Amino acid sequence: MTRALMVTGAAGFIGANFVYHWARQHPGATLVAYDALTYAGNRASLAPLEDQGQLVFVQGDICDGKKVSETLAQHDIDTIVHFAAESHVDRSISGPDAFIRTNLVGTHTLLVAARERWLQGSGRPHRFHHVSTDEVYGSLSPSAPAFTETLRYEPNSPYSASKAGSDHLVRAYHHTYGLNVTTSNCSNNYGPFHFPEKLIPLCLTNILDGRPLPVYGDGSNIRDWLYVEDHARGIERVIKAGEAGETYNIGGNNEWANLAIVELLCDHLDRRFADQPELAGRYPGSPAGAGESRSLIQFVEDRAGHDWRYAIDASKVESALGFTPAETFETGIAKTIDWYLANESWWRPLL
Picture: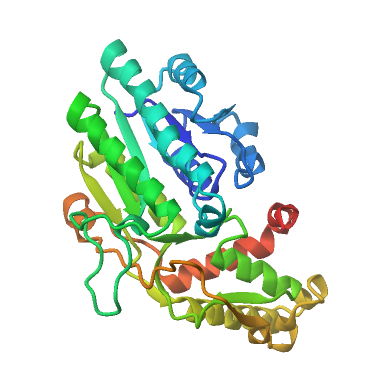
């Protein structure tokens, strides 16, 4: 029974959504948000929960072993949910050092502190849940079967290589020391609080401001998309019922080519502007007011080492833990657009 939970990277996109989900499902439980507040961490995302006294916020670096250990002890933490990571592939290509430090050294620092606290100290029941990515498996051809948990790792970017290394460290701490761990590898997430450097929020905010929509190559690269609230539900299920030492792939069963995603967002916003004329007044520079959002699409030079296709086989988490996504892509995209239109005060300062 989880009594006191610490979420690393809690002010980031997926971390913040998980924190809200956990707070709704476990009112009154101890909830510690641990975040270094780098460029992608926004404490304002968690302000309502802080104001209501539903969480304790700790600003700290996961590479700071002393700070991590003090936080675990001060709040008597029995569960860590580890989201904190450098995650933008383009940034990993131009500056890989930060990815090695955060994703590898940071994860190891957390594991060391958890082992000292739980195995060499209190001996209490515990869980270290590590959140990873489908990118560790490499790239799929158009006809290849989706990624399963037993597939060989073949990371192709500094980002995915650093996440693959962190996955192996978590596994090693279970098999070597007996730390109670689980890992989940997810497909591309979308939804509220998504930092606007990633594809879907980038396109949404650029359409509203009339800025170009950059599409790598010919836009044919394929990704599997998962609504972030569904991901939070899946992680909760793994924490509660997952078997120690096991890995679970959490996906949306929802493959889309990048260009098709961009065109879908253009068409959705064109319809929103047609149905809600007041939007043209709020965003006078947007071609959505004239039903011409697609005019913003610009094809740009492909990213170095760009993986062709990701797809998750989520049959294990469904059969073993009974988890399936609740949102369809249609409902999830509608909720995402609603959120960005209603929360310009959140995303505007980040541009």
